[in-house]
Length: 324
Image (tube, rainbow, N blue to C red; front, side, top):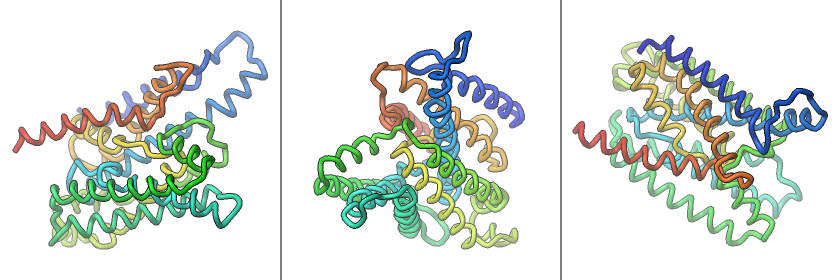
């Protein structure tokens, strides 16, 4: 399918989904007269939540494409290979330990610790799984399992030594939620995701060259080491910003790029920007569904994405098994 047709379809679908997301919540926000209460709900609740869904969805999908190019494998995804868990551990560490040192923990402190923890995880994963320019897929997935276990246990330990208020806050945050995010946090998240996305968009040609091998990338005039570090830093930045803002939301970086490749092929010049649209659309629809499935009780978006992404990952593994 031509990328231009996919662009149009995703753009229209995202526009319609965004309208539904804003209009439909605990009740319809559309009426003949616009009341002050409706205006407050729109500006302080619905619109920030929509922008958060767009930023996180697009960002995680782009990070998924970048990591898949880095490891040359479509199974690489921030949640599966431990990057999200590493960022989450850094954020929880700052929430719990930082509160012992300071009376109030700011968003940038949580995000900064999440970034450095996520970046260290990506670097360690690449060092373990890659030898002589080749990535061992089995080693990558096993290392991801190990990182998820290590960071998961470390996070649980921090929750064990935290007080009741910290425990409640961390537990709710880990399940993932797009609700009740202040405007300044939404804007910071959007700016970070946008800048990192533009940084990765500038690497589209080196990305296509790198998947053919580091020697090929070098012969085509691109520095593989420079490319790898830029991808790792920018991907860690996106994941850390998303984790710090809304908690752990998995499988967006796996599901969306795979579906886009089925439609337009493997050229990153089409896959990466289209994945941004697809990731935003997926998370907007998922959040709309999460709000309404058990209304008035809201289903955590991280839990919903795990319920959807787990079966998809198993299906993807079975497809790869048949292709071998």
